[in-house]
Length: 200
Image (cartoon, rainbow, N blue to C red; front, side):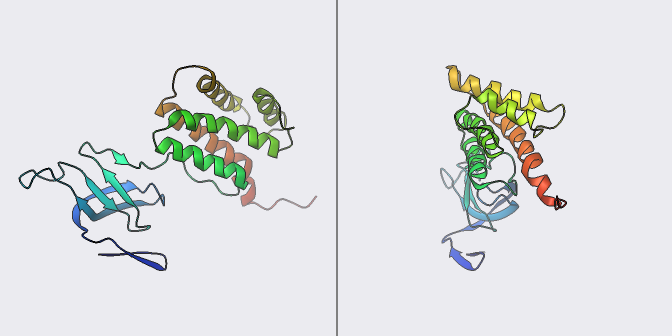
């Protein structure tokens, strides 16, 4: 079976037809419904998909394993990519998304905190300040939308809990913070980039 990704052709030997499943690919982010992959069984007499299945993305060739309970490995990262974000900030955002997708929610929460620090410094704050001073800087410079400071305060509180307490962050914590971070990145970077700024 040949799978084409861009200009390159890859061959997954031994693939066959598997039960079609709609899912978001962890690698390319496309919503797909593929019926190409590998089915695993415990014995010849046990019906599919007793031991899980590996499905191959038709866009990027990447494999995703589905266990017998329907869990996916790797899972698709939460949130969506954001355009017009400075590279260092975007790298951190994508790291937070990948961490949450890899079932490392505490790491994702801590990276969200670091993202806000990077945004503040990129927008004129002095390096080496406290995290709260960075939040205040973003608020004072009107990068936080009206009635939106509680978004950032939520990130501050949850990331402080992850940084100082012995409790671990949950997957729900990570998804919520990534969604809030995504919203801030869109407001600060992506939306302004869509319309040319008027000349001074």
